[in-house]
Length: 302
Length: 288
Image 1 (cartoon, rainbow over the protein chains, first blue to last red):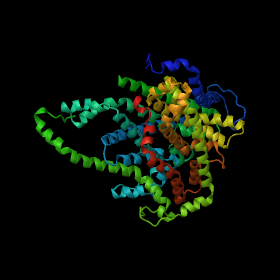
Image 2: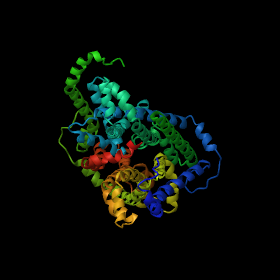
Image 3: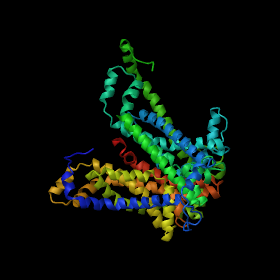
Image 4: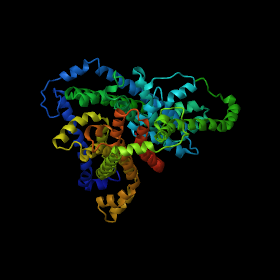
């Protein structure tokens, strides 16, 4: 949006230097911290860099990319797990977050306390959260199986089994990040005009119809922002995966996502060339998804 | 959707609508209470376990009623590592947050006041790029400079998260401040920089505080950067906590005590500044 007669216009003309002087330190810092690494990662991805960081590396063309893309043992399963984890977590968080936001929409006594309870998971250290859930979900000593027994469900292996680990970590992620969606949506809900809903009440729409056809469409921009933010973070999830299952995402790589794989290739195997190729592919993958989500959000908005 | 209220039933609808609030508010209250339990109980369980003996921690029949002991805290503090790690986390968090605020707040003012939204895209890029892809080049660069394992390199890496975070929150904050005050100050003879320093900055103090707290929390929680870039003397609490899992996985009491020491500051901050933190966390989301 451009305002030709912006109130800042007069100041703007006379103070171009000041503006750049204030902007440059931050931009230069972030730019330098990011630009060199990105160029260097792309460079490493076409070399056979391995072992010591300063050992020589020979260019090998696109061989690392070929190796990664034909690796059905680690790479493709990691892509698949990244997708499953992200879709599972973000979908559940969005549905539950939206439900919770609608539940908390109208002010009530104790709202302050509920919001305090909701921000603690968001601010708590993921590694501490991971360890806490390791204790709660411990197959023999944890409280979770005991509570399940009360409602008649048999003991679960949770993080102790190969097939159960990824779904369990999805649920831990849902526990930690659903409040984020709720708070974002509550902020969005508070800015909505009341008239359309009042008109819908007069027209005889029931609660569900008002939600589905009046509130939800108005909430789409906030929902889209929340979705993009959560998707990017979910794709890059590392801390809870690494803290609960260790290097390689467990003995059978059962929670090895692209980020965990790239970390392992880099710091456990020192395969800098191959790791960089995986990282370039991973970054392009994230950018692709962000572009896709933003385009879809833009379309449904108009 | 089969439920559509027909006008002819309006009498019924009216009655139902009048009676609904009381029933509905009970259901709603129950649901909200349940949600609170789901989110609060695991944290309470962590705090409780920190005060249990190891036999009690691993016995799920011991609930929240037991005789508390400080042995776990004593044990991990005698180990020495955790206090050093907390000091490290504190140093890295405070320094990286202060330096980030120093460069990000003026930049946010410039972006917010002069409508340079395109620079905001750099924030997005910083958020998208996986941190692992930055760590190898950083490690390489910092190793050449002999900085790996120092506070400097930890502060720089944490600033990489904090600067975009503070920038993001403060751009929105400055855009929300009325420009008239600064214009009046300019008419009264202050320079543009003077207007920023004397007018905008004091008004932005609450926003700066919120952004700084969130930046500090991000630094306090950061795991991967210290995992790679710190050494034994400079490692931060999440790394120490992680090493406790690897080498002493059966000491649940100690683990929970350490996790509690990490989490209590965050809970205190949440209690003190819930409203501001929510505003900071959701900054920019409603502007699309």
